[in-house]
Amino acid sequence: MTTIKYFDNDGFLALCEPATYEGFIGADWTLEQIITLFNERMREGKLVVAYVGQDDAFGRFKLRETASKRPAVWEHTMPLKVEQGPVSFVTYGGLTMVAQFSDERLDTQTRDLEPLTELAPGNYTVTIRRLSRRRSNIWSKFGLLAYPLHELVVTPGRMAEPPAYFPGAKQLVPGLE
Image (tube, rainbow, N blue to C red; front, side):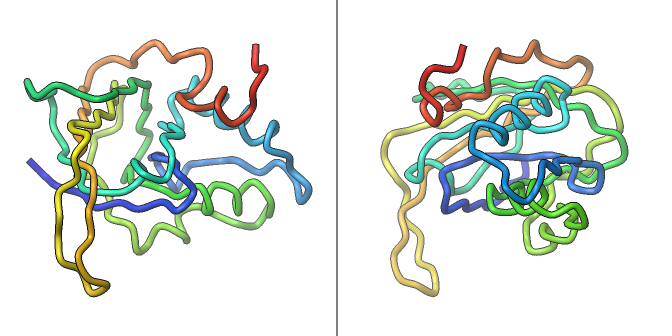
């Protein structure tokens, strides 16, 4: 079982295949446009994305093929289609840079992010599970740091039915239908 570290200041959990991700909108994109784009890419299996808030968008993610028996505080399941790999966590900042600039590529922004173990091309169901309300403590170069515990369950063979909107979208843009 692999453990991956991740952090996003904007409160998003997102992963995709950076080399194949396409997300250009235009220099003056709006929040509604980016939410619509994220939903389209999620339904295509090109982006696993959830807005979970700043308290949960960081920590250690244990990569598993099946969920543990530990109860989850919340979980979100989405489809993922891998064309060539690798798949890695990406940040909201990186996704918005790609949305704003036509010559920006997501794979140039993920060099410092840890990729998932190699996933063969194919269809997957990805479930992000938050395992506990309490935080675990680690010592970092910045001092004691508390982080949530997560599981990232990646099941090969089929793509999950996508939700109508990515988790948290209605929190960002009230009134989505």
